[in-house]
Length: 512
Image (cartoon, rainbow, N blue to C red):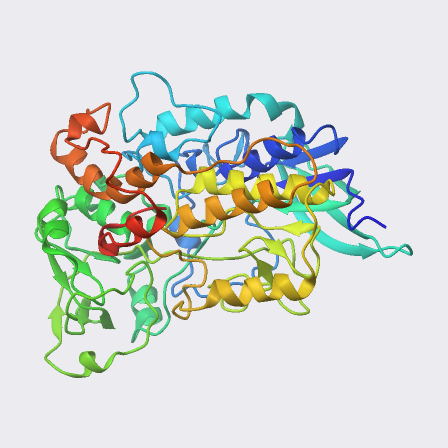
C-alpha cells in the first residue's frame, strides 16, 4: 500500500506560504483533484495585506503569554458598526519597505514589477502576491474562517481531517473531510508581551493604553510629543523606533537586554539604548531598567524575562512620566482551530511547534503540514521548497522517510539552538535549508513536479550582503532600483557556499 492516498487537500491561509503550497500542489500532474484554500480575509497576502485599522488596543491583554486561545480571533470592521468587510488586522504598518531585496525575496517563477525599488514597499509586495496568486485564485474561498480541524482515522488505517469553516459574510457554517491539511495561517497573530516584569499588570490597569504591541502600530503620529520606550531591537523594533524618534519627545528610549551595534543605533536616529525593563512604577508612571549588557550574539526579538548575572551588577536607571511603552517582542505560535490535536501538544509556551520534521512536516500525522514557521529567513523561496516537498510526498513521488529518520531530523533541527529559538535560523541557515530540500527532491523523487528553488552563488551573495545594503538604501533616500546603485556588485568569487554566508556578522541579519 502506498504511504499516501491524498486526493482532497485543505490549505488554511492564502498568505505567502499558503499560496506557494497551492502552486506546487496544483502543478503536481493532476495528482490532487480538489484543493481548497480557506482565507479569512477578502484578499490574499497574509501579513502583507495591510489594514489601516488595527485591532482595538483595549482587546490587548497585558502581559500576553497565552499560547492556547480556544477559538480564532473575531474580525473587526472598518466602520466600527459590525457591517462591511470583515478585517483581520496584521502587523503591517503604513510606511514599510522590505528588509530584503526583491531579487532575493521573490518566488522562483515570478519577478517583481519593472522599476520597483530594490527594497520594495509593502504596497509592491502586496501587489506582487496578488499577481502570484492568479493561477490559484479559483481555489480560494475568501472571507472564510477555519474554526476547527480534527483527525478522523478510518478503518483502512488512512487518516482524514474534518475541517469546519464559517463564511464570515453570511454566517454559514460548513464541514468537509480532507485527506491532508496545510496549516499556512502564519505566526503573526498572537502578540507576546512578557509577564516577568514587575508591576506590568498593575501599570496597565492604572494607565490603560500606555502599553501596546507592534502588531497595533500603524504610524508614528500617536506618539508625537510623547516620552516613548520601544522594547526590542529586532527588525520591526528598530524600524518602528526610527519612525517614532522623529516625532516623539527625544530621545526615544530603546530597551533591550544587550547593546546594539553602534552603526545600527546611528542609523535609527535620536535614541538612547537602555537595558531590559525590571519593573513598572505605577504612581510615577515610570519604568526602571536593568543595566545594559555588553554587545553579544543574543537575538533581541524577544524578552525571556530571565535575569542574567550581569543584570545583578551595576545601577538600574529610572525614567518617570513615560507616556507610551511599545513592545516589539514578537509573537507566539498558536493554532486555535487545532485544539483537539493535543497528545502530544503542538505548542506549550508558544515558542515552537513540536513534533515536526524539517520544521514543517508533522511526524505522527504526515498528512498535516505547517509551512512558513522559520524566523530570520527569506520566506517566499523557503515556503516554495516546503510546498515542493509536500506535492511530491503526498503524490507518492518522493518516498516518505521512516519515522525514526523524521524524528532524528527533528532532533538535529534543535541542536545548538537556545531555548525559545527553535525555529530561529542562524545566518545562512535558509540557504542551507532551501538547497537541502532541493537536493533531497532531485535525488529521491521518482517522478516529475514543479521545480523547487535553488540558491546559486549570486543568491547566496545577496543573502550575505543585503542587511548592509538596506542600511545604504535608507541613507540614500530609499530610491535605488538595484544593489549596484547602492555600491554592491556581485563578484563571482566572493561567495561560493552557504558557509561563506554564515561568516557574516549575525547582528546585521534582519530577515523576517
